[in-house]
Amino acid sequence: MIKKLLVTLSLLSILFLSACSWVQPLPGAYKVALMELSDVKDCERLGTTTTSALDKVGLYERDNAAITEDLVLLAKNEAVNMRGDTIVALSSVQNGRMEFAIYRCLK
Image 1: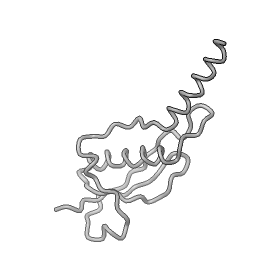
Image 2: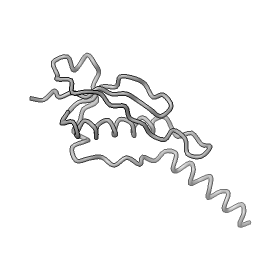
Image 3: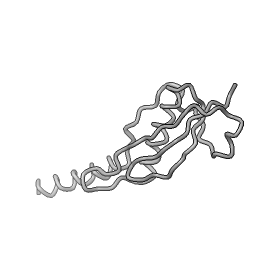
């Protein structure tokens, strides 16, 4: 009985953790826009960043939407650090990594 309960709790915690975000936003991160490359032609490019997040928790692969959410928020945090206000995804998610360009569009 106890062994069954422990197994069930372990599986539930893995499922719960697989969809969680561990990234804390910096002040101003939610004001950073995620745009397409065609939308930033009049903006100043400040640089690029490659973000990474756990794509697996133990043997369980995390949900792709949760990974993408973490990667975008990490890029927004980096934009805040670089005094940017816009990010553009330069790649898709690959092995828990994604590349972004950082721009300043608001004058």
